[in-house]
Length: 149
Image 1 (spheres, rainbow, N blue to C red):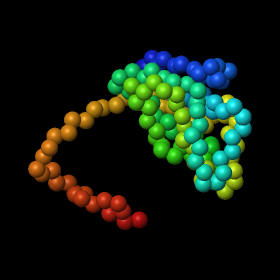
Image 2 (cartoon, rainbow, N blue to C red):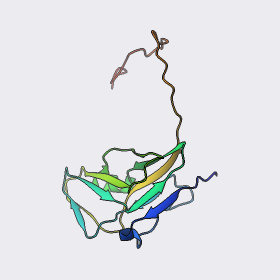
Image 3 (cartoon, rainbow, N blue to C red):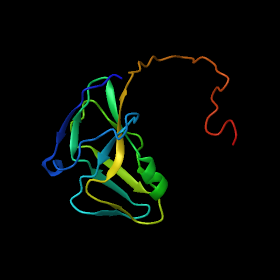
Image 4 (cartoon, rainbow, N blue to C red):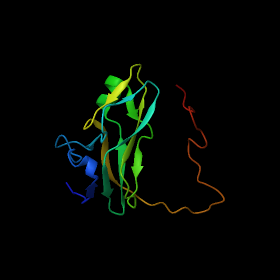
């Protein structure tokens, strides 16, 4: 498996937290940890932006994607609001995770909780070409729900 070197810088407030880690040999994503000073509560239907306390240097041609953790979603209804969130290769700020509580009960985030996962993905740059016509397909302009339920 090829590895992409990504440089990581921690804020002083996050030096005691683990660095993002692949939890199993076959895992696609590295877990991200909450860098909160004290317990934080997300009420039902509420949105909170949670710091991870880390910044990354992702090489050109790659992006970081922030995705939900399936266990948080299945057990608590907590997910990443802008999923997948994108970390561009030229962004050097602290990574924050936008969580939303879609569950019925308040959800507590504690320091060091695993709140999301980071996936490093190669990207392709599109070159847009102005055209007067587009090739026909069987689908054509059929959009939302055009194939039925």
